[in-house]
Picture 1 (cartoon, rainbow, N blue to C red):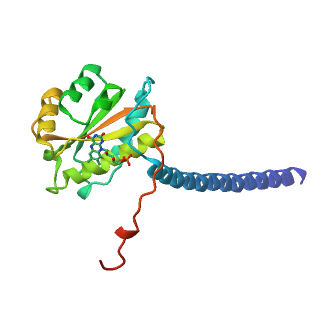
Picture 2 (picture 1 turned 120 degrees about the horizontal axis):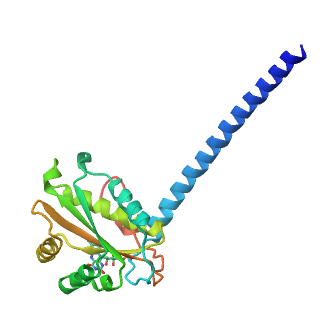
Picture 3 (picture 1 turned 90 degrees about the vertical axis):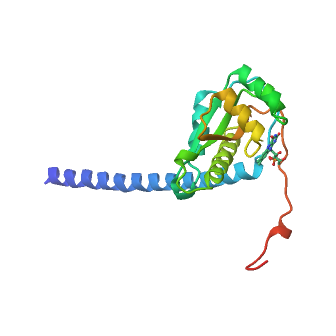
Length: 206
Ligand SMILES: Cc1cc2nc3c(=O)[nH]c(=O)nc-3n(C[C@H](O)[C@H](O)[C@H](O)COP(=O)(O)O)c2cc1C
């Protein structure tokens, strides 16, 4: 009798524990989802172009996270027509400043990512540049979330920049350099800005 009561008692303890653990895990998960929403908004609202960088190196894990963020972007029909060239060679970074008129920050940048569109991967014609834009923006936001400074340097549709980058980085004809993102730890603090948008909102009709 004492033995079976003990078994029942232990069984109840086990059930209570099971329910307790389930509740804890669910609550933790809810908390995490809340945090993720906050983090994403914070990154979006505080992102600015950063063009001055410290000497601190960027580790490979960070770069991997940036690329994961990039490939998490939406794309037309899920075609994912992108490629990413990670540039950390000083000679190449400096060389780009010789033909790109607004890329002086590459002299200080530790790394850069060239986002390219592959027209052979395009199943929905004319959408590759939109997909690459979404990937580029995801990289900028992830960089902000990771405490990195980043700036979008325009490449597409400027023919000369496309040709020069294709030559320098040996990019095949079917792949089009789209945007270059300079990266480094920030050596300048960009203030959060509030942009006027009331005149740009229209309800139901223009
Ligand atoms: C398509 C595109 C091309 C850009 N090209 C350059 C560039 O070549 N050099 C540069 O310093 N900034 C470039 N920028 C960054 C813009 O100058 C910057 O986003 C804008 O001034 C707003 O500032 P913010 O990013 O701090 O909000 C570019 C941004 C976009 C979206």
